[in-house]
Length: 440
Image (cartoon, rainbow, N blue to C red; front, side, top):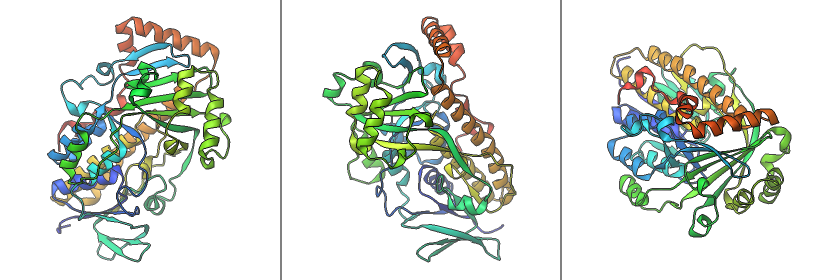
């Protein structure tokens, strides 16, 4: 291919926008088609965890000004605490154990990021790239080797590569890889947000006002909590970097995700209203510490949300074409471990790298896409397996197992060397792959 590469991205979520930022930075032309009618037209969700894989990807894909804005709007990832439903602290894993390189290199650190803030940052400077209100229908290959994307309003987009970044129900993936499927992840839950104000800080347990935590019980139920506390001046930093002067919701809060096995939840969980969800939560944690029960009961009703997790099935390698996929479109995974968004950003960085090489004539286009898909399958499916393993740990049951785990955690709390050896492989999924040893 001798002409400059033009890339069509379907889906303007974190992965698709990260790819668009990277391609524009590299001088590759790109257009993004997003079915939402505008930025902020739907609720974008909660605080997310950006691990070193995600941070490296953002640093590589974003211009310097937006990378600095990311740092200025991101809270500390914090330590990770394990506690009981009676608020007994078992062990706390320091950041230096989870991410050993974090003190020297900001790309090896982990961050607490508000998803709407991150999406606004990723949209910055892409006004002429992103087309909102574009519902993808199907694609067609043209006679000259290009790809045409067809949208519900009748408009078409033609490019050299089509990237499906359109989420777990990806229409691009359904056409491209009809054997790809999603199945139940074997658990569901209810997410909550409780704002950290002077009043709530007075009674919320101190350990739950920092970092990340897992409440472990002898039942197929667990509670994950994580704090988003934006740095001072984050709103102003975002406005300067993006040119968008509308104020962000920069109140600190605790995300509380209560997760349970299907047998503990009603079949119609996803359809229940706020009152019914609150009653289910009250019943599941009826014998927990009163402060934990109060946190969930007094959380923001508008942000209480039921989730039934799904997971992509692994499929064998396929013949690469000028259509490809990234993120949840190909490797949907449950939120356990916080790997989904980070894996999507890693996809974006690698695909950007490959497409940029093809645009410069350094690689054949199909060979570049094949190299991307080969590595993406390897780390993407590994991330799915890691997320499911975390699910199993969070929902494990049995009095003997619970006693053994708690005893071991108490020992880890007492003996730093034991804590380091036990949790030293914590961030295996985020360790750099060979191609991530460069800022490009």
